[in-house]
Every structure is written in C-alpha cells, then in structure tokens.
Length: 223
Image (cartoon, rainbow, N blue to C red; front, side, top):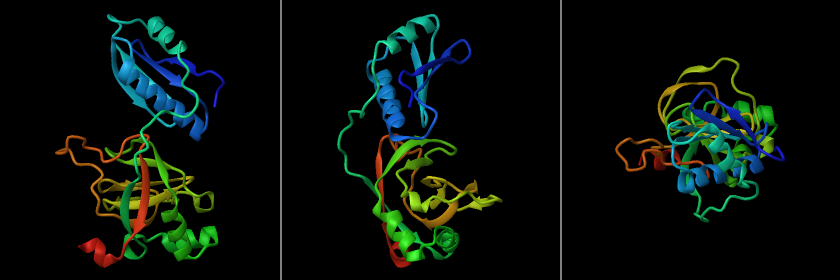
C-alpha cells in the first residue's frame, strides 16, 4: 500500500484514487473508507463512486466541482487504517460441494495436496470479505481464501458455468450469480440468488460484507 494515495486523472470528468499495487487488506480497507466518505459526506458534484480492489474512481460534474477541487477534498483526508463498519455477522451461503456441482474439486485436491474433504473443510472454515463486485452483476470477489487453497484458473475457460457455482482462482473465491462463461475452478454450488433486480438491493453482497460458506447435502440443496 502506498504511503499516500495516487490521484490519477481519468478523462475530463473522472479521477482515480489509487491506494496500492496489490490485492491486500490494508488497501482494501482504505478503498472502503474512501468509498464511504465520498458517498456519505463527499462534496457536491460527485456523480458516481466506483470502488475496486485497490482504487476508487470518482465521476464528477465539472460544472459543479473541478478536478483540482475534488483532489483538494481528497488530499485533506486520511483513509488509512481499518474502515469503520458495523460488525454485521457474516452472510452464510449454503453450498453443496463436489460431484456435478463442483466438478473441479478433485483437481483442486490434487493441486493442493489435500484430500477433497480437507479442501471443503478449509474453504468452509474461513470468513471472507467482499473486495469488489464485478465481471457479472452481483459477482463477489472474495478475499481471505486460505493460502493453501490458492490454485490457478483453468487453462481453457468453460463456455457455460451454472448460476450459483462457487469457484477458486488464484488467492480468491467467488460465486457466479448467473450462467456465464468462466475460468474459475468450480468446487461447489449454491441455490442462493446473489443478484435479483426485483429486490430493493439487487445485489445480495456489497464491498465490505463478510461471507461464510456452509456445506450442505445435495438433498438439502434440492429442498
């Protein structure tokens, strides 16, 4: 994480605040703190705030606030440290692991040198943080994967991944909210709807939310 965030122009009406170069908890906490400050107490003229792993992009109305004015507002604040968030309990997502719902579980076990049951146990034992939503509407990129479960993406992505599939890629885990192509290694599946445009909050998860996976049987999944 940088000692001071970098302010990078993005066209005529946007500015990116970059907090570091890596996916790391400190940069992610700064991203969430910056995102919250801009949304709750930001200056007039801010149109949209877009948080990512390690940066926040701000779209602004140049007739209301200049880039220099926005930069001055940002430079006067410290977003380092742990973001002040409510201690909400983790969102529990039930998952049926392995079989046709987790076709890559056996390969993940081989790659990691663990048994399939141990992969499941360690994946379900961790508490994850939603770093960002992207790729698909409602797709959560979850940090906090046990390092021993880190595996590379598939060399050839699948053309069709079922909705609800739980996958691993690098140091992250995630859940596909809708059927789509994808290259993450699939270890399970949930029936929970992560994206529903009819809800007041369409995305079940938002950056900063915590998540825990709970193993269930196929019969429980069907019910």
